[in-house]
Image (tube, rainbow, N blue to C red; front, side, top):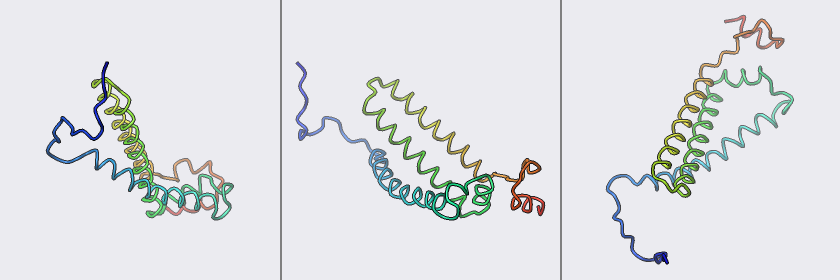
Length: 150
């Protein structure tokens, strides 16, 4: 019969030299969680409460927001923090529940690669967004005026 070691017993393994990545991940989760609450509720307030509310959200609304650097950086910061926060949380779950070392490494690598790809793709979308592509089919006066001035 296997016994579980006393939780207060000294650990048999010696702590490695170098940075404590688990502690850094733990701190990141707390800090990013607080920042994400502010960013997400600000995003929801601006999108749903100001102006026409949910009825005012259309292509022109998004184009207007992405035309300002403030809102670009707001959305990119929210994207980066949320994806890294989520990937780190999934990494913790994988580390807790996956028994095989090889399977664990493959899953953790897959998590970080997919998070990195989505961060890259989302950042490119925000900073390279061009509302004037396909403008001839738009019925929004504001958008037509903006694009014809360029």
